Length: 172
Image 1 (cartoon, one colour):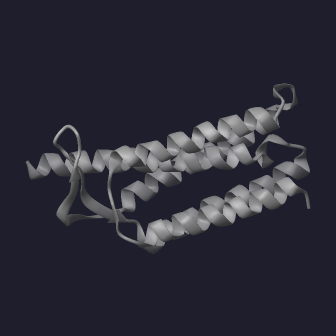
Image 2 (cartoon, one colour; image 1 turned 180 degrees about the vertical axis):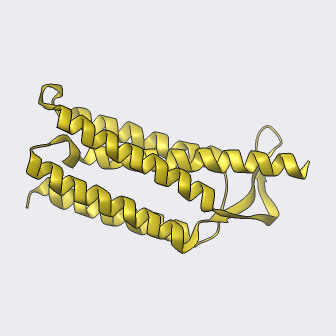
Image 3 (tube, helix red, strand yellow; image 1 turned 90 degrees about the vertical axis):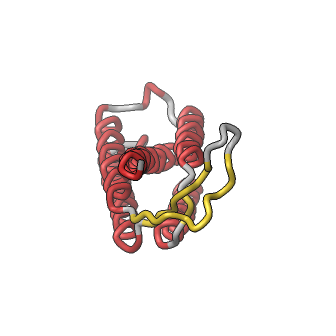
C-alpha cells in the first residue's frame, strides 16, 4: 500500500462521513454557500492533478474512466437534488447585503440520498481498482476524487436552485 492509497482511503472515509451526516440532517439551504463548495473542491482537485499527473502520461483509458466517473457523479448529484425534501424555516436565517434572506428553507435527502452517495463511492473505488489493473494512473489521483465530489455537489446544487425557483414562483 502506498501513501497515496492510504491518503485516498482516508479522504474517501472523511467525505462519506461528512456527506452522510449532511444527507440525514435538516440543513438550511443557502444557495450561495452551496455553489462555493463545488468550486473549492474543483479548484483543489485541479491543483492536485497538476501536481500529481504529467499530461504526457494521460491515456485514452484514463480520459474514458474519468469521464465516466464524472457523468455518474453528475447524474447522481442531480438525482440527490431531485429527491431532497424541503421545508420552510420557522424564521429565515439572516438577511444578506441585498436585503434578501440567506436561507428560507432547509432540506435533507435522507436515507436514499445516503445510499446514492455510497453507490457513487463504491463505483468510484471499484473503477479505481479496475483502472489501476488496466494501467490507468489518472483514475487513482486524489485530484480526481475531489473533481468527482465537485461534480456531484454542483449538479445537486443546480437542481436545488431550480426546484427552489419553481417553489418561489408558485408561492408568489
